[in-house]
Length: 209
Image (cartoon, rainbow, N blue to C red):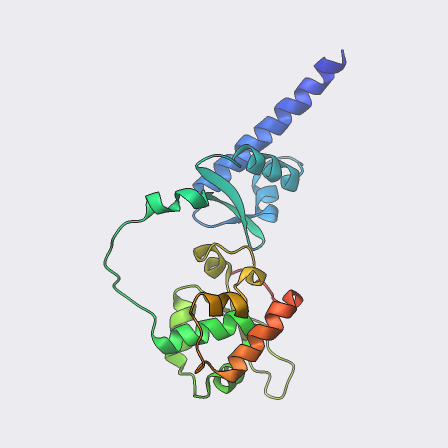
């Protein structure tokens, strides 16, 4: 008798997983738990359903992974090389844009003045516009300082592109040095910020676009 009572619950859980699976598969962008709750037509534990689904895909060629505060299907890391293909790069970020992006990622929420202080040169509007246009940087809350300047943060799309769950997963100063990505000419302000972030991950914030 008890088995008969448990069967509908098992079927309900399986059906919920199927619906979550369909939504994630069809979505071009990562899906949040709240979005799942809105789309699925009856009450259910969204977090439990997606965690069960992630467990089923744990050893598959694609996995259910967390991106910021959302979830998505992604190729298993060890199979990523199979997806690569040679293609012409039609647009590249300038050095100024790359430096600005790195400063925002490690120092967010950062104002234009913060970026200029660290880089030591002014930041053109075009540089920030380019980063916003490609969806890697978004505008955050205004800072509670004179003039109420806008702040900038990296977006969920940035995290998704670089395979990060949150900005706290960005490499620290030690990792960047070991990878040969820093040299003695790096900006002192930027380095001090990396030291601070590597010792205090609590300062990192996620921002969804």
